[in-house]
Image (cartoon, one colour):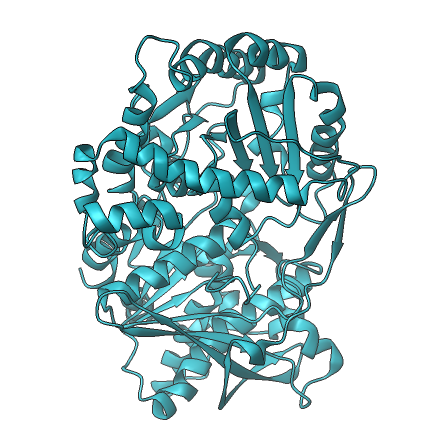
Length: 578
């Protein structure tokens, strides 16, 4: 059995224990595993306060509040208990179960949400499964102890109750879960009659742990990997643990979650071919493969497009590769299906934007105008404001090449002051551009809003600063709906971009940091939008079918490949059973 560990897993819009891309990928991975009937369980944390609920005040500044939800409404509480020693105290954990049902024969995969909010625990410990990515570094390490150590122990406790098969592989989806390797190592020492500690670890113990673990890294910059001072480690987990074994768990004198996973995994991968190369540069002494991410197609395709595909490509939901036959569907049928999803999105935008957030007034969006979507975490390296680098030029393009309108969404991390400033900057440009470019920033970007946007916009915009995008999956979701992407060549887009066929590139592919990139990328974005994209969309290049062919290619070429079904098949061959 494969045990998949992730700090966040997006299984359902009504289970808000996820923040964005990592959680959505994890949820799609579990859904694909269920479709494929894999022997699979998933382990995560129950974040009782969710990530946060986003509100934009009258100045355009992001405000955060806790998400109110009751786990019992969607999850089943299980009777098993596990205990983890944290800060010298026993912290008792329970598990809540969510069943993900597959689409082939109705196979079910359990997702276990670990919860410390029990009366046996102190108020401080009960709050450890409260806020996703909240608190200080000590809080983060204690959460990771619950996930990694508590998760392994909980599976042991649940095995007789649920008759689970023995775990043959533990898959760490990012380094947050890497304390599970310490727990497997500790358990190995106990089972062989040794007192756990750094000095009794033998080479065969290391190989035993490695044989059971695989690791996926998602972070392309060293600063993004969790590191903890050893004083914090000793405070939280106690002195003399296996984490004192520096060559296995530490880097530059700190407990480093990524190096722990690298040292004690049989297989390591990045999440796109370019990200694999970036990771090999960061970790030159390690063998890092790559498996490019994907999306769960039947989750993200809009209802009108799914209806068309069901009629014309039966079986596409479980045989994603069969979408290549979309090349035989008339372009008018694809555009009609997309127009239905676009109409629903525009009605939603106009209803939502009427004077309710950030000082915005009624959006007045049009179903006939070219609609750009941008929805990512609001942070500097994703460059949400690149499209607005020259507002006057953007207005001129809309006037001369064809009317355009832009839908923005995305949360800034509560501690990311610059990300909040970017949101505010975008909102302040709304009145400046209003006469030429309709612009709206929708708050509370979540599962449902993502599906509305990727299904209804005409173009998906993605502007990360290379090489800082590990993969990115929102553009894959758009492609599944026949929506092309305009993006810098980073992450998956290096593999998925066929210029003028599946979308368009911004600038050139490079792995090097380049301070002059902003201005060149802005110029490339504007030029491509003005000279290629808008003339194609509005049929002013002398070919009324051109845009429909781009939509068709998005599905046939990219949606048929960038799927979690293909991704999980690669994990099966390379990581799980290979």
